[in-house]
Image (cartoon, rainbow, N blue to C red; front, side, top):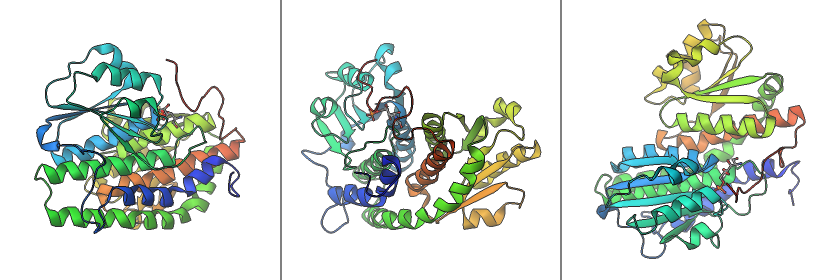
Amino acid sequence: DKAGHKHFMSKEIAEQPTVISEAINFYLTNDGKDIALPGEGIDFKSLNRLTMVACGTAYYACMTAKYWFEQLAGMPVEVDIASEFRYRQPPVTDGTAALFVSQSGETADTLAALRYCAGKADQILSVVNVPESSIARESNLALPIHAGAEIGVASTKAFTCQLTVLLLLALKAAHMRGKLDDDALTDLLSKLRGLPATLNNAMAIEESVQGVSQSLSKVKDVLFLGRGMMYPLAHEGALKLKEISYIHAEAYASGELKHGPIALIDEKMPVVVLAPRDALFDKTISNMQEVMARGGKIILLTDQAGADEVSEDVWQTIIMPEIDPVLSPILYALPAQLLAYHTAVAKGTDVDQPRNLAKSVTVE
Ligand code: M6R
């Protein structure tokens, strides 16, 4: 049932404020001041390393979580694509928790990576949408994301719910490891509780995204740029666009631009720049100006404070609500998803069942 939407993907994008709030409520204690993990929980003090493994969109959720675990909890984190991890024979040292992220819980490479770690890692953890899945069953602790059934092949609400649960885990780790005091935790949790409402307000960008998408549907290549936590989001935006609109899209860390991809810039390849007005904003904007100086057309995703600081030569600006930088990846997933969705609709592709793709990749 598409609940009045043209596609499951659009319904699932719209559901995000509700399902994220369900995920938050599942993990918060009644007073809203702490995070209660199911079962015996996780003793983050006894761990010295986190290895996160996944495929596709779930991998980009892990990449984002690396920034949270490192910055908030001071924990060394490795992130890997399951198909590479499983055959590399990576050493799994004492004090390592291995964490597998999967919407379906049945992805063949992720499951094989989990089996490789079983008996080697101190703990096998998973973040899953299907609690009865193989990955959940073979973990010491499976953390549900509460996204509800996701039908569209392109993952949307599962991604933002994965991010939400991973952020809660990073906050729990930071608190347990003494990097975040009670007040700081309470403050961030209260901001997180406000996120579904902010995301709901952000849905107002849909009309302007639709306009931009009309133009995007006519191009052959798109580049996505981001820095810090916006870098994994740039990857997610590029993956979404490729999957459902069949437009070639690539993501780069803004700082890598000069190391090669700037050679591609011309007026035919729009460049999507993800840049909320955070500590790294000026750096990203200077990369954006390098693109503009070479005739590149910019689609800037930023907030009002960010928009006020850039010149009028930016081709298209999509204004997002202001948000604490820690929460920005969850919010900025929305314009990335909507750009892909409306571009695909403008092209007339099969949004929910894109060619050559399966919802769950259960064979290698
Ligand atoms: O079920 P999983 O989360 O393990 O699936 C992983 C990927 O196959 C999946 O995220 C894929 O990349 C999606 N089609 C992305 O939209």
